[in-house]
Image (cartoon, rainbow, N blue to C red; front, side, top):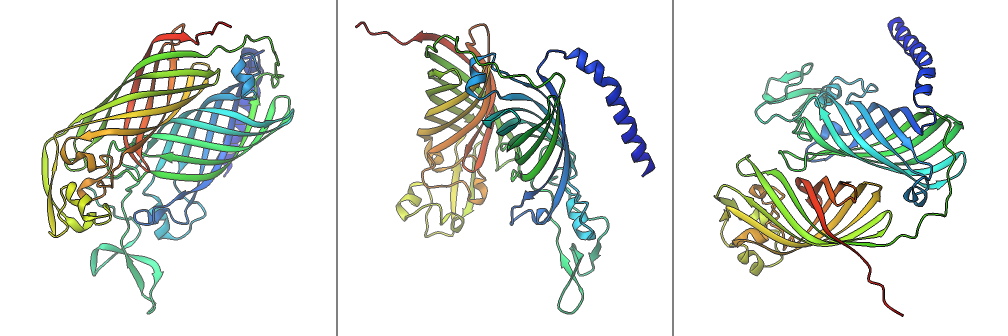
Length: 462
């Protein structure tokens, strides 16, 4: 306890000593630093994550960012937002939990360290108060993951002499004996480094010209975008309290109406979006490539919309296997559809062939919320063909070995990601996007695109 107090005293003394130095270094800047505490729980998957039920754990985070003041038009249109980067440490240990069996199951998750960029916009903003939202994307490192060939064995629980795969729980049965229970592996996270999404909304209070208090409701999602199995991921809900320190006084908003009227820009573009996924039937990784060509329009300084044609291609190892037909009984509404997919409802098993080359084509509509060179990207696509053979009946994002992939005409997919526009005219862009067949991720792609032709609206002569 004394060591803890000494460490805190040293830390506070250090901050006081460097405060003047930091203020001088960032003088007349709009930068800030903030620290916070986060406390919450995970939304458990009843079928596979019983160790997340009734489980609450803490996080600490450190943020560095910049507060806008209206120097650019988009800053005024979004009510003077801020943006920055966050480092967040989470310990999946419930310090309020005293039962040994709960402590053992909670050890499965270990700790995590997330690094993500974020954008914070204001819904309502006054001089000393704001209601805001935050959108963040990045990556998270987990210290413990699912290991296919390693069976989880709790350290402090007594093995069941009658069942070597179970352990004696702290719970008692009707006769007063300890119940025999199996403890699951960490099937939520299967890669050490995983994509990370952070969403927040809350209230900020300006305490002094340089100090703010932030109270936020938080949702996070971490999953590996089907780069490895299992891929249940982890969804967390929590409350966050942050203290923010502006190196200079909180910047006064600049309101200026001298900006030139926005002229919508039309562009023709192409993209190349390579990525990878894991094939469920052989646990091998395969590259999946998408190429697109389309049209986009800068409707507003902060809004971009577009439409494109996308073509996907992936080459697998050829594969055939016998499956239990009853597993797919809910995938099709009638016998005709099932037979078209190669399933004979009258036979207990059906041999399904996985094509070696899978190719699809689709129309894709999207929108982008733009902040200078950075843009959040979201869109929806509709296949116009999928093939060959039975592939058009398969949702290739899911585990088709267990019957989870065959859906009734899965023609819709979704994308979410970000782009960074480069160059003097911002014609080049790079980024990353996650494609999914809701609610299951398909694959993570890394994007490069080029706007090869730009033109303004044609003015009609009066």
